[in-house]
Amino acid sequence: MADITKNEIMHIAKLAMLNLTDTEIEGYTKDMQEILAYAEMINNLDTSDIDETIGATKQKNKFRKDEVIEFQTRDNLLQNAPSQAEGMFRIPKVINT
Amino acid sequence: MSKQDYEIVIGLEVHCELSTKTKIFCSCSAEFGGEPNTHCCPICMAMPGTLPVLNEKVVEYAVKAGLATNCKIAQNSKNDRKNYFYPDLPKSYQISQFDIPLCYDGYINIETEEGEKKIRLERIHIEEDAGKLNHDDYGRGSFVDLNRAGVPLIECVSKPDLRSKEEVDSYLRKIKSIFEYIGISDCKMQEGSLRADVNVSVRKKGATEFGTRTEMKNMNSFRNISRLIEYETNRQIEVLEEGGEIIQETRRWDDISGKTFSMRDKEDAEDYRYFPDPDLVAIQLSDEYIEKIRNALPELPESRKKRYLEEYQLIPKAANFVTSSKYYSDMFEEAIKICQNPKTASNLMMSEIARILNEREEEPEQIPFTGRELGELVQLIDKGTISSSISKKVLEELFENPKSAPSKIIEEKGWVQISDEGAIQEVVNKILQANPQSIADYRAGKDRALGFLVGQAMKETKGKANPQLLNKLFIEELKK
Image 1 (cartoon, each protein chain N blue to C red):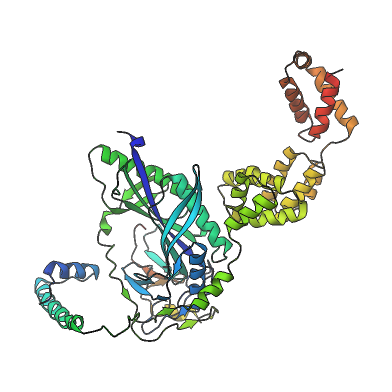
Image 2 (image 1 turned 135 degrees about the horizontal axis):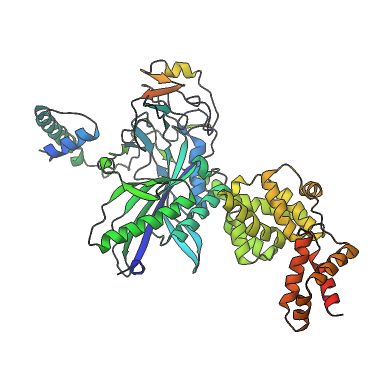
């Protein structure tokens, strides 16, 4: 079994802003251990004749020209916002930096 | 033990907005300002299903920055996600670079009191800027403007090689001037297009291990960075002297009180869980691509400085000053094309223009007039039309009315120098009559009396008398 503790699950949950019950923490700890154990298989593969890969696919250098295209319009962008004011998304007050 | 027993250790992360036309991953305008959310599209607003595509100019500019700071360029690179929650970050991750930055292992040379010092650069990587939160005082909430979200940045990370606030100032000015010279950013600190995270620690002199550091983020004025370093190093030394421990943390700088404050609520924030962004593909740069950029680099400050020393015989102090900013340097070159007098042009910049900027708390890029006006002003001094003391007043006037030509200013203000011998003789006679004691002093061998008399005559003519002529006539009279 891969080594992941309840504390690590709680830490990840906190970073993801999830409130987990004790039962859920137990469950996720067990699930995560199984997932990691499954992924462990990759470490056992022989990769000696494979070049180092960078990125998720074999593609590279998909670039865009530096030319402005204006999106029409702001109203379209904001139309699904739960709350807006003066052309901006309105959110609960955020204090400090 | 006291402050003198400690050494200050500082490393900087400089964030610099690139002056591309568009954002890093979409075709929205990257221009500063604009009505809220008008430089936005579904991509930079992180609408579901959108995909980023990297702006080729961002890669080019970052490679330029790397080459101009003696970095190695990674031929295989990629983008990674940096995960954290904040309302100005619509995707809840910032696309950045983690383990393979585009540029690494560089250095720049800075001027210090002990001479030139090499400051090593760990890396330069590309990333996107966040949006802006607006707050109001009426408790109606906060307001999110995403015009800046997705504007391209490079982050330039130094090694902890800086040892004083003076070195930090010198380093920042050098980085700023290099980025200006190569034209990748306008580096306007007041608009936030150049800002720095400052990492500060102290250790006993002679210690080999670094002390625990604190970090102050998003500093955007030279003056506040100096104040911050002064405050934070003193605070750390005090804590250590009282037997306490420095906590590794991000602290908030408060402009008004001039102090830093702990931000304990963010203790987990540094766990960013980076991973490669699966929406973007690898960046692979060929030797030809890199060499093409290297060959197209414009003249850098070091080289301009050398040219000013050799071709124009500027003193090192003046050459350092003029090349410290591209705006100064360009202004200087434009001015001497007109006046052919590098010495006076550089002197006026170093003494007067710098003084006025300092008083106005402004930077060279905010000088409202051009090298043309400066060149014309120097010409007026050289021709004897105005005295050098009047030239200072003309410069002050130019800051207020940048559109008017110096010749017009002096005409309107009646500042033309008096070089008429008869008129000056009258003034000389008047001053001599009023100051018999000075005449006696001068004749008794006190040369200083002459300076006093000339000063009085200048005051009488409101600085307009030709100083050489004044001197000559006073001496003639006094020797009678």
